[in-house]
Length: 237
Image 1 (cartoon, rainbow, N blue to C red):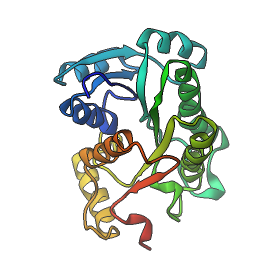
Image 2: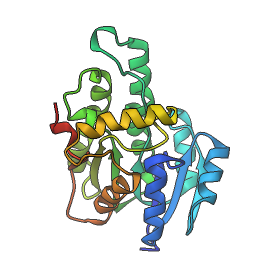
Image 3: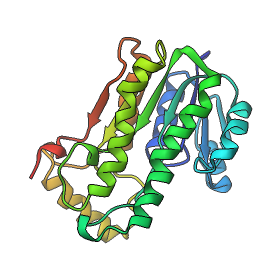
């Protein structure tokens, strides 16, 4: 796999960083991107293998063409951009915050995939990372669910429109990443609550989502699919 190049947009922490580490171990060449240059550099230095870093703001749509030209030919694109805007009870969700959530996650996923397309191998793949809010009926997540459902909706449409490029999506549940920017006590309490509602009895680990992404990259007979990797939390009440 050393000849195959994977670009991970949003690869400086969390699921994106775990995916980079996992793919490097499997012998891929990896480029990670992030907005924060210092954080991105530290992430790159933490990884072993054929790794490159490119600073980019995925929400700066006008710059994306230049960024992907700098990244060069890509075999596989992974879009692991996070976002928490748009959360809260439906009746009181701030519409400006919801719009920001769509721009920073849904629009950024869409725009990055579009900008990368001229540089993407016809034998390659695109993997979007949404979230289980798109599949679960959890009060307080109507905005997040809409944002992530829009991302998941791209997989089957683009799998047909962009064939033979394979297009898939991973939908993670609650995963222990820096996205949960709480105190240690708050994280412990929050994760305990989610674990109690999850059939496997715990929250997820970044590597588990990375393994799901690696499967979709490597399996040449899977396209148009959303792989839900959530420990079963979508089944709970």
